[in-house]
Image 1 (cartoon, each protein chain N blue to C red):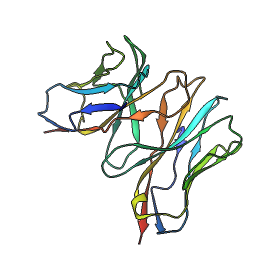
Image 2: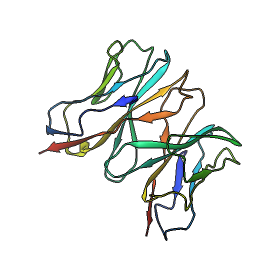
Image 3: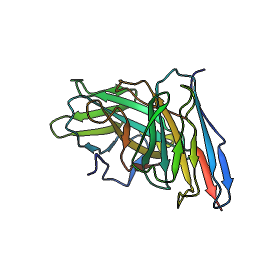
Length: 116
Length: 113
């Protein structure tokens, strides 16, 4: 079964607008971490933001925020004021602390295109 | 500066040859991971190790082998048994027992001709 689901293969956003990238996850663990990574065309994986399962407040890092809805098992990434340099692949990921052995598993990714 | 170094960045091999990809980290992390990424796809876990001299298979271990003789190093060998070895390979590390993020190397792009 898919543990991380990203249903948007590609997204377009106008420069300076906000965009939401969707992510749902499946776990029976109580303790887990959720992440978003950015992968530009160079291939490197850039860590963006982290949300722990016990964190009550949504994580924010600059223009990135994670909309964490635990009951719905969703962890959407919101990018505010999009920039041309935001064009890249974005991956949602999870680490499970109980049954998952702390290894990180990834979704299929969403390719974001920022239009000038 | 602490980080993960993968070498080489690009690698070409003839079909039927084994090839070893290097991964070294100086972050003092106990856990290390190898992922494979095909074009337009997500990352799939090949092998991971949480301690020296121990490692576990991930989702797509067939045709690959690893060793973990030192904490800093986790080389991946792509054997001739791997039917479709051409891919982008990423190495990562993290502290054991922590739910915080994994750190990645720059990746090795392997092309088998």
